[in-house]
Length: 288
Image (cartoon, rainbow, N blue to C red; front, top):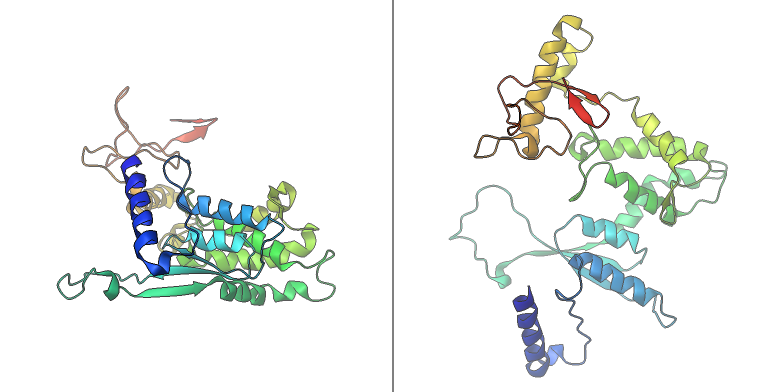
């Protein structure tokens, strides 16, 4: 990283001295000397700039990257003029000879977060009608709550809550429940960075009333004699979907972040077997 920072400093000095387009602009380089992820360093820079008396609220921000977390960070800034520059992502097999990797042949898209804000305002507009809420309607506070709800479907650092998958309509379900519980909550869930656990529990309680299970497992529900078969199929489904339950090259499963442990020899590694040992959780341990 030290070598990379040195090369970046050399590159910036070279461009500023030789390229007219680089002259007269402020270039900020945060290298390995400052710990933290790049996007969080940028957001910290924007927050510090907004705290200055001379900050122009109409300044435009453009952040480059494919990480979906950038969308949440951009919304969290509450700046009206924020956009993301993203590369075109293609799926499936690509013909390497037909498509050049050179920058001039790369397609880019500009994602305006102001449009995302408009869609969110349209989604939750019914909460702004007179008499619906007993407290003032504030779209910025709803955006904060929306970002909190997005944590439940998972991100780069946290797994999703069981059964909450974006491709299975988890966000739509949370939107529906949020609009139902907010009038009864007496306020927003995220209070300027502090989570109101009492209001959050209302949402989680509403979520707990829904049964999250694959449609292929639904016919087995309610049949006592099929409980073992249901458990086997559930395990196979989890192993197929979750990379951290799949065996590595050595035959042992990767570290199980979900807390589920499978069978293995005493004192040895817990390896994935064809006959998984299902255990009941007691305290912080999984015991037979």
